[in-house]
Image 1 (tube, rainbow, N blue to C red):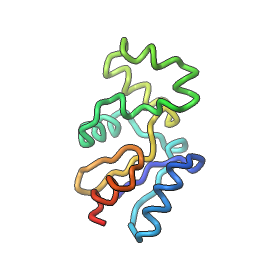
Image 2: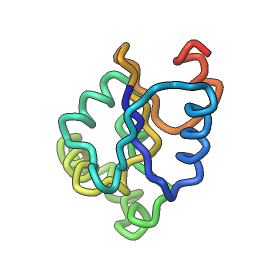
Image 3: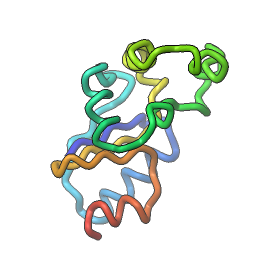
Image 4: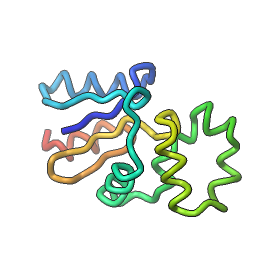
Length: 118
């Protein structure tokens, strides 16, 4: 399974501690150093069943500085995926990609425990 995170994010740290405390094996990938590609984001969004907007880190500085709250509604889906792929800091995190094809975005302990069968 793939754990996409940003080490400076407190929510990501909680998610990592949750996985580690339960002995879950995963591959960690720093979102800033190895940002998701447009193709990965497309696949994850489809597998997650979430609207594309849920993949944006709406509380991030970059999101606010680019005034994306006002710009996103006018952007095409293609433009939004390209924007997300351009900078990992725009992507909501953590992301957990399970081998079953399920994708979890953001950390909610109960959701992660259920998805992992814990």
